[in-house]
Image (tube, rainbow, N blue to C red; front, side, top):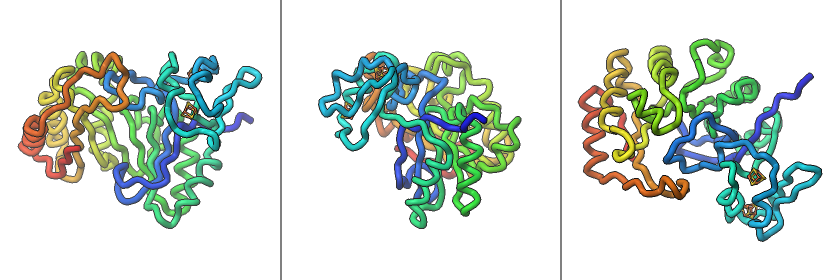
Amino acid sequence: MQVNTAIVNKIIRFSSVDGPGNRTVVFLQGCNFNCRYCHNPETIGACRQCGACIPYCKTNAITLVDGKILYDRDRCVNCDECFHHCPHGSSPKTERMTPEEVFEEVKKNMPYIRGITISGGECTLWRDFLVELLTLAKNVGLSTMLDSNGTYDFSKDKELMAVVDAVMLDVKAFDRSEHEKVTGIHNDMVLSNLRYLAECDKLFEVRTVAVPELFDTKHTVYETSRLLHEVGKQEGIRYKLIKYRPIGVREEYRSYETPTEEYMNQLRDIAYNNGMKDIVII
Ligand code: SF4
Ligand code: SF4
């Protein structure tokens, strides 16, 4: 029988910004988007075990043994030079883990956490792993959240949805071609998930990163909040409006301006006028 595993980029023991209450957040490696403003681009690609990052590690935390990258967490000083020099948008600082192994890490944080959030990369690329890990979490009374780019058809997966309390969904751009420009992929499934998750009360939060030079952010905020109003769910769902910041962004996409406070307030007013009550600007 094949062992169910996922490549884990990192586990943050305590976070208060990834869903309700204090939560452990698990970041899984790999994404099917290639967002221009991604501030964790090292989570996008799979490591090709090429070894090109090894010379940049001054503490010998990375070695290539029998064609496989070995990462020594104890030697690592988190300078991040390795993934800044990876030509494949990946990181050697990952670990293939079973749901049980991840859950052992989660358990160490109980009783100080209310739940777990699985993020990425795009966590739904590891669907079977999610079902197992979230089942383990639910069995001990933890709440379960996903942070997703919305490309997975949640409406067709009852088994997964039975163990997911709610999703935090990115709406990177509402217009189809603008979404393609920002991420490399159109947004048909994202918008269908926006509606589906709102209607079945499994949408905790919608997130849009404001990059007015890249796409019409006001149009996206208007249409997203209007759709939530249309399905009558504008009040219980948070809209998080995130200022683009160049931190961590790849060199070639670092030139966008960070939106002003005034611009962000205009976005908030647009969402508010469409009935959204819980609007957060960060
Ligand atoms: S992280 Fe990048 S550079 Fe390092 S081994 Fe993997 S693919 Fe190669
Ligand atoms: S982050 Fe860690 S593994 Fe990467 S180069 Fe720095 S010390 Fe080495």
